[in-house]
Image (cartoon, rainbow, N blue to C red; front, side, top):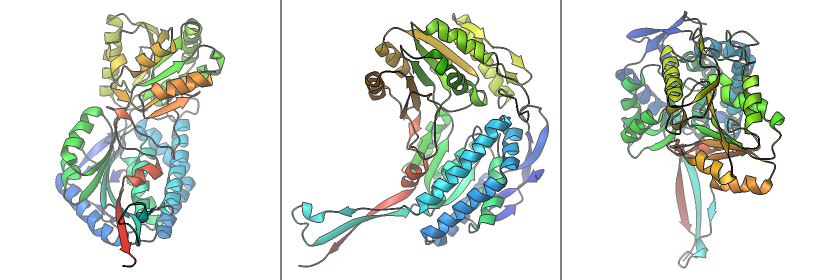
Length: 476
């Protein structure tokens, strides 16, 4: 792997004015020097993407599909190498990193299939008076330059959810990867080049969000902005983007309801995984668990016992479950939120301490509903557990949040499952599994402050195209 990475603009590596060191979050060792794009570089990338789009928009669907399928094949062949990149720059455990690469391969294959499934519809013109002897139909056309700003936590797969549908639809794209995980994006330059993507269709410009976001959201050639990140930054992007098409995935504070009659032994393993996978740095990580009063004590005991068995260690160790959080700044914030919760009456059942740059997985009970660990997205290995008396109580508590991405409920009752599914205020309700469940062809997006728009290849592709209505008059 290179030690020095430039910017990828117009199908070529471009020398930046400055580089910045990238460090391994687990060891604090420098792993690469990353070129830092400036606003002028972002303008150049958008201009190159716009020029490339003029030709690429005419590429046949089968050619776009072939490129995306080739990308998937190359990634599959290089899967172990790519997984190690994630482990190095994100401190994701190697097992979780391999899973991400496997999902990413599948995501690009979904995109290849979607490229060939772009259908409009026929409109029954004669259903309206005055519509006789007219033939109407819709077509979907690529929108143009898409700009994508991606997060650190799934640096290959969440990039794929933006790059894949953009290319499948016939658009060009400018990608600004997360500052903490640029390598996973930059290596795509080589992969897409090998797969035959025309120069300029994909441009990759690592750099600071506050330096580049204005160009990426306001340049006249930009027709669509897709962002995954914090609520605060999402609101800024929404204001900057104006009337452009916009997809915002702004995180969550996912609730999980465990109803009466559930076999606790059947849910502990999944619950612990949902709370602590990748150190809780997952948008749909379980942050609040609501357990029926009859099961609460038993659940807490078993959940804590299993949590204490999680292995803290190096991301490259096959046995590791918990690693360093993404940055010292993040670690300090999480610890301060835990301390505040304890000061406000919360009990630490386990965890709350650090090993190096890692925070031991932390379970809290008796949490005040005004504490930050309850109200906001903690994005760390922390979960709060609450008892409830009635299902309505649990649903009301679950909905008492500014977020609404995914929720989950475990229940043996089909009637209660449908009852909860109708009332939970989230973009996705996962019945009889954890809210952390996601596959890459399902619609994915939130309500409330969790954002606008939907991802999932087919759904993201729809939002990266324009619909055009065409009518023919066929006679007098």
